[in-house]
Image (cartoon, rainbow, N blue to C red; front, side, top):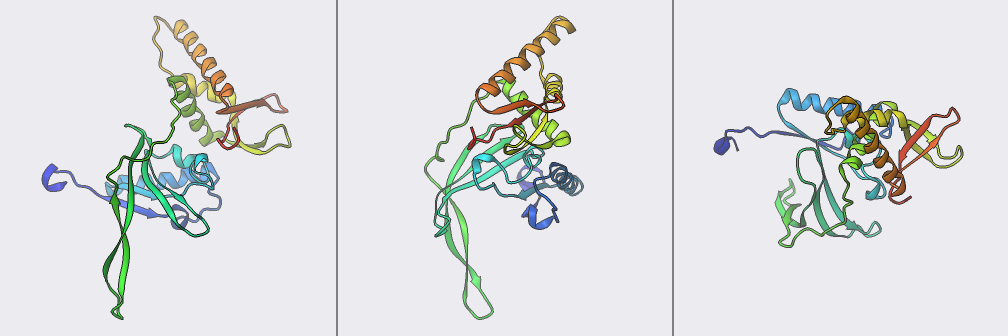
Length: 246
């Protein structure tokens, strides 16, 4: 890249976040955000891309393990996926996908296999083996992705932003499962700040934003992507519903 394009390419790889940082609780959004600020500082001061390796939870459908701030603070999330037999360790259907991209297209990239190769010998003359990625000639396996409209995407962004600073762990219906919830009014304010609409005046724009918020919230509740309820202090709370709970 330096020779042909005049662009220096550099990267720092953190393998893994939980190993490199002394995290008291990787579910804590404040702690996750602090780590992400450190990663950004490394990238800015060294002039490199910082590639931090993290894992999904028990179910990949629920997203990255721990706090939602891990995903919210990333510019890009590359998912390395496989169907794994957790008893034997056997893997199949390996693939890589762009799970998040702030500035580009998201979706499957390619399937791949791991090819066993000899990389030398140890001090006893024994072969040292490793694996190299062998890109598949077939297209990456297709997977279903929910298509969201502009209002739904803005609601997601607004929720993630508020979650970074105002998250509260609370129990659904007082004694139900614990969820990461935020005040609904703060999400509404952030939604309206982010939502861009046409209009001839401030009154018309404000009305359009109110309508967009109502449509987005009603759709999110109806489609079981989010849930909301009033607390004992009459504060309205909203949280994301995991796919395995929907």
